[in-house]
Length: 357
Image 1 (cartoon, rainbow, N blue to C red):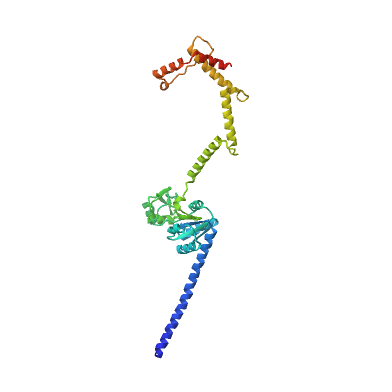
Image 2: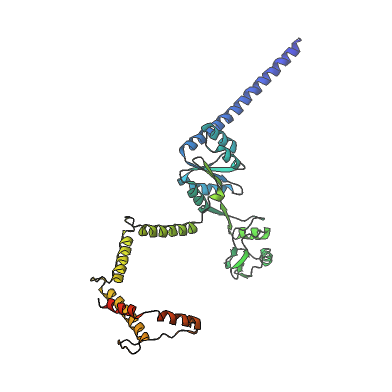
């Protein structure tokens, strides 16, 4: 081999060696960082019982940071690459991982907590931030411009107010809005003009929330739609269930502290009813027994008087005034007369005897 060729080969080998060393210095720290992240996730998976997978689509970084600070007291929340989370989950043998994989798409934040999955869903639904509207955004609620000064000098912006049908006037060198006006309804698309105006007015009208995709709860994967609970409906169902349970427990006379008073009260009322029906006189039942007896006596006396008008028992019949709608037909009247005629004199005598012992 010629000297020049050999020297060139040596130079090439040295360049390759230098390049290899550079690659090692660049790649190795990245691998170390990834492995450290995997170990961090593994520690969190072992520490917490519930994991929430949260989509960050459409969530600005500034709003996410503020919401993350609000959630830190309930657990640990951080953005991880899906493949690193998956690797950590595989290494710890996370139960239900196959079902969880379908939610590991897009940019996600992972919330590690010891709240149950339903509590986590309710918590995320309450945490929200506001941001300025951008052209093409969908209004999350009705948007109103308040009455009063805008701080905007008259000029080209007057035409924007006019296009949006906002009544204005120029006072003290600035544009004033004459009255509160709605400029968009919930679901409307925000136009470039409206987005620009809202920003100039300093109005953040778009609500930003963290969207829960699914929750992993000790091996059970629950989609977000199954975690949304109507608290009012649940409260009503629980109240109804409690009433039914108390009624059943009272009927069964269960010796439970919460219903002992109801059980005793029902027993007393039933005992009084039986005593009154049997004519058993006590200090508590005497007025009711007498009233019951008087009522029966009057009914019997009226029946006797109707059968034998010449007998005067000192009871004056008070015929009821039936309403036209309640008036019995001739057939019904005939049937009633037949029933009355079926009462024998012996039965009447027995009734009188029962009144006087």
